[in-house]
Picture (spheres, chains in turn cyan, green):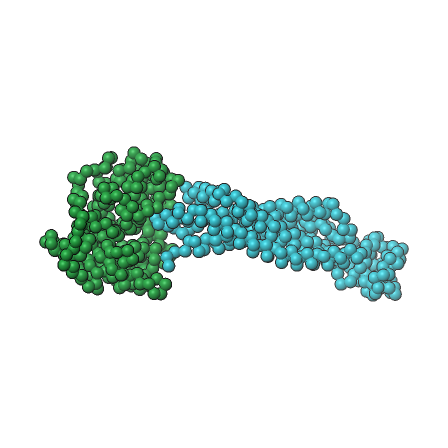
Length: 290
Length: 276
């Protein structure tokens, strides 16, 4: 009877103020969508940055596992006048790096054979203008399987991801606050619409939580719906984005496990925003005797 | 049942609504609070239901000092204190039955109990045949009966009534008073604030008179205006508040003849049952 009552009352509140409720849900949705996207962009940036960091602009993937041969190649490349630094990354290190990149997807990490990870030489140039010549020369070296290079796009995207990340977090927080305010407003309106009833409930001795719970549930539902929509929109939006846009060397793939775990975090934020919003809305109206 | 010890209530730091009130109300008593508007009657009622906290002093209700009661326990106090107001405070979109049942539902009483208690109390107030009506389909007196039923359905120890007949004509008021008297006879302590001379004079119950926040008169079988009238009737005027000076008015003028004291053999409302 109790649960039935609480759910019934919350449903009535939601129905009575459709526009306000939609506004609150929308506010939660927009703010959490921003936050979710910021998290995803951050992850994409983190993945890329793991490889393309500290000025490394070219990676030469090497054949086989002959360490002596690999050292030879590395030393040769390091001796070229354009090359500032050549760093050898062996199979074991490559696997470690892989583990870091996909730490949010342990299933994938378990599937991969550590010995199948290719060794590579990471190259930093004195002057990036010389990269074309270096790539051509690298392709001619025996034992080099493939050469990939960071284009300006990499730098730009990393920079963009940093900006987006910051902007996303700032906007997410600002909009999150507005979502809390919107929810507290709808709860306030719902309380106002039922002030007579609440007055009588308190008169006959309904406990504070009995009076509050339906409004708390109302806020919670608004927060969860908004958060759920944000996760869905984020998920499908991201999938559309990576299947329709080619960013070349940027690793845009983010494992599903990451999307799911961060999605749950976003949902939890929605619920918390809803609960805080309704508590704020409830605060003054349900105060006891002066 | 109720004990006030040096109770003072000051609003906004300057307006004194109740000044050093000390009194004692026994279980089963029927007490009228009389006095002009602004004398503190309603404040006293609000203090007794912990709608307000006293600025100073102790208010003991059913063995507890409610001035010290934490907020979260207030609902439990309210369950043993029924309240009735001048404006009925019924929910317009609920039927008579639902209005009364509401009081039990919101304190989590099981459905079976609601189904059993509500018809009982509606029978007591004489509204069994109108349980499916909405408040607006009832007369003022009937609406007040519903509100009394709601206040009483949980069998409170104390019934507080603030001007319950304030919106009703004299004939209807008599019916309401008969009902409150009946509830009082079940052992419920009744405290009623009123302006109605006729009712107070007719009932001859304990009368506590307030003036500018002070209890200035307290008589066990009093009338509305001062003890002189009581003396006239050769009835003992007892229990004068130790704090309030006794006001002796040479002549308590009464233009209204008191209606006969409602007794058991008085006309009963249709469907009026035996006392439960």
